[in-house]
Length: 136
Image 1 (cartoon, rainbow, N blue to C red):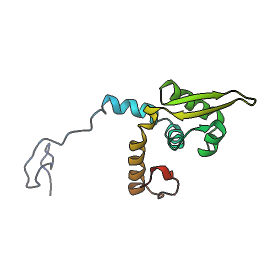
Image 2: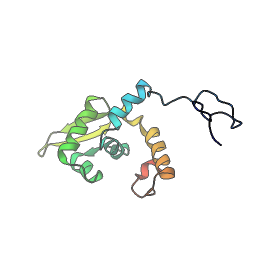
Image 3: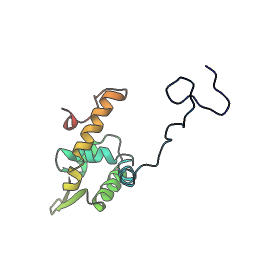
Image 4: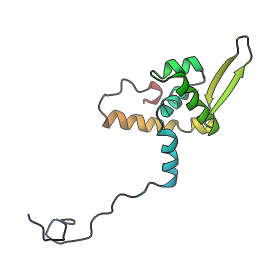
C-alpha cells in the first residue's frame, strides 16, 4: 500500500494518517546513574562474585576470569567509594584483605537475578556462564 507524500502509515492501517509514535526518550536520571556504574566492564561480574559472600582478592580474581589484577583493584576501589563494597584488612602475617558487599550492594541481588533470567531467555549462549546464585 503506497503512502501519500508526507504521511506515515501509523494507526489502524485503514489509510488514516496520525501522529507517529513517541520517539525514544532520554533514560531517567536513576537509570543513567545505574549504568554509569554497572555499565563499566567487569563491575557487574565483581558484584555477582560477591553476592554469595565475602572474598579475598585472589579468590575474586579467580571468580572473574579474564579480569586483570589492576582492573579488579580499580573496580573494587570504585565500588568501595560508592558504598557498595566494604574492604576489610586482617593483620598478619600475612596481611589479608577481604571484600564484601554492603547492604546497598546486596540490595542489587534482585536486579541481578532478573537480569540473569532475561539473559537466559533472550540472549544466545544459554545459561552456562551465569552464576548459580542468580538461578531459581
